[in-house]
Length: 329
Image (tube, rainbow, N blue to C red; front, side, top):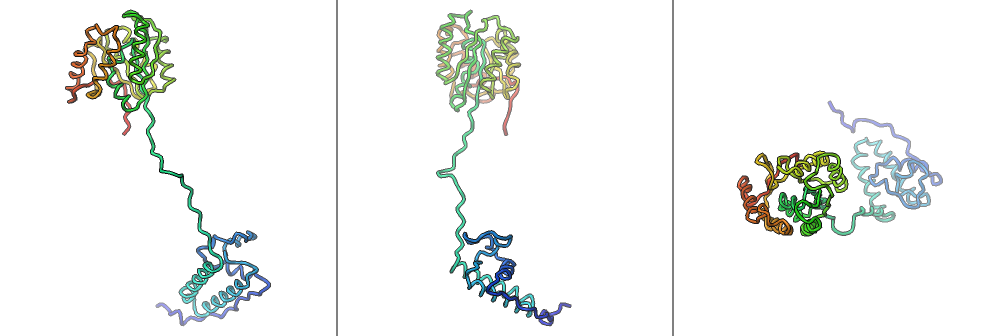
């Protein structure tokens, strides 16, 4: 059975004495009090002991502090003589009122400084531009195979690099063909790199690999477009094989269709160019030295795009074989 607290007797303790000329005892009592605001202290109070930080209102020259400590000592003695519960219920409430009154009257606690925050609106994170590398053996190869897709990348703000490994001397004036390539690249806003490999005599060995590797190392593309391996043109096949080696660290690699691609071309990626077909046609028209060729007829280019579009329910599509593809979910 629980015994009433009032029936218990407590020996009356000797009241604490706080002499005017000795504040050590007073500070000891004050330091034992559970003040929630005890971490604040006056700016002129020296940190002379581990307990000095716990009593913000202490001041050895303030006589009213000593009077308050005497009253605290008397309340503690009275509370112990009457039982612990009255001390908890009444003494703590009284002490809280006293400290609040004293802080407001004599020692206002300075407000904590506001946290540092940047001035102005929070900046909006913008995704980094994706670098796209399109590799072709000759001038106009890239525009024919993936010109619409490159125009789509350009409209999204991606960075485009075109690597043309030769000047296409076997099919026209090399200087004219280089100028045509520069004009088409300028329309796309692309950076153009023209190599000097021999037209129709390219190999898939170290010479070709080195040229492609340098461009990959310099520009660090995330996506590469290149010829398919199933192609009747020997340069296209060589460039495809060399790119597989040089771009082995690139996350996504796709192969586009050329006019000389065989029926073994097997695309698994279909890019809708409904809004970019006219731009693709415009890019190809820069190659005036080649437009007499049947495979550059605008009607054939549109018909090819519409043919592949039927596989995915789009009006116009550029198809790609997928070597590898990184997908971020």
